[in-house]
Length: 116
Image (cartoon, rainbow, N blue to C red; front, side, top):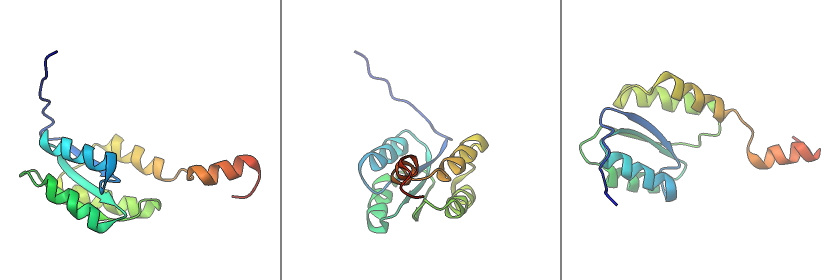
């Protein structure tokens, strides 16, 4: 099996949940591959740890926030675009659309007729 390194230099990625777990792993991998990053997480201390790991000379903006509210997400996209470069328009639109979806627990309650 051969291993090849992937370069995504010049790409801009917005990664939510970047403070730990999969979000942190994706952030570190994308940073190593050359992407500019906009990182967000509700836990500011964990997010700062991830940002410190990712500091590899690539543009990086980290924004502690709870992205459940679409107005906050719009602000993150705007601030990230100004700091590190522009997200592709389709990616930003999809992200903002997805943020408006109900949380899974709320959706389950709505299907069961127990509230909204």
